[in-house]
Length: 501
Image (cartoon, rainbow, N blue to C red; front, side):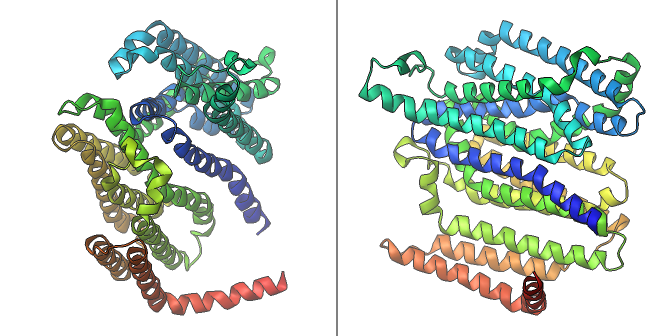
């Protein structure tokens, strides 16, 4: 029991910085969208999509390979040194290529005047690739506090620099144009300060790790590198396939959009509205950090499959609550992503599809326990590739016809299809009796309430929200009616635990 508690505690410490980081970055959205035009914000969304791919490409499975071989090696420092030397060399080569061809790359991407943004983000990705192994070493050494501290430092610096350059400096200059701030800030850089903030945060993180690197003692072994590369290349393929599903849309839109629209403007409004679906993503990420340790620690119990089934029920319930909550109150939430006058609300029609896509992706992760517990992780790779291919096909065919809506639909159908396929194979190799009738009823009721909410038009400010709150309450009542037996059984236990506490 103490080992499980330690595992759960470390999982929280490792996971919280990631979740907090995503949440704080979400809070930067109104800062960007209320201070920059959609076209400028589109540059940020487009370039960060490339970054997501490059982060996978530049680490080329080395992080997982390090875990695999350092944990079993009699000389883990040789594995660490080999991985560090390899990643450092490839990262420096990458920065050199990016710097040399930054103008050509920025022109091809659609923002020829912002070639410095390319260089800054290239350097950031390279530094993050290099520090991936020291972070992995902290996890291997079971040092979650230091891991979390370095992550929080990185996040904090990024947030503070964004606030300094985007909010504070323009305000100070407007009141005192001749102040020292003029040497620290230039309005011409604009959204580029977001990239510069990322870079400085990554530099500081790298500097924090220098005492731990023990560069003079670092050993490089070619035979170890070959073994690590052989192990890691399938992980690279899976990672890239996953990035296709999640990020290829913001890369393809500028090259496939038609009707003479400004490509970066389209990416900007699409990326901004997509932020409203990140509430579902945060829920899923938090759930995974707690579920996966629970999964591996309980799968030998006789009642484990019934527990997994119950967990799926409640996962779907909370996911649908988030879906309805965002949709019913989207007229309020939309002001989080910028003013309507700047066009940021133009793509709100993608939000239901993005939310549902994220929900099905979460269901996929939850019921994918079967291939993890049966050591058939090859299926995870196959499903990731299938999802990436579906996403790619839908985007390429339909973006020229229906614009960014194709990207939202591509993500939804990709998530739905791989969930169905995974369920089919899961019932062969590790059958879990999910209560599909109950889960289906939750989806049906939620969708009926959703359509009622969007179809009924009431005038005034107050009445629409009264109606939507009533619809939301109906769903809560329906959940209580179906789950009260389990909830009543759980609540007294919770109270007893508290009473003993």
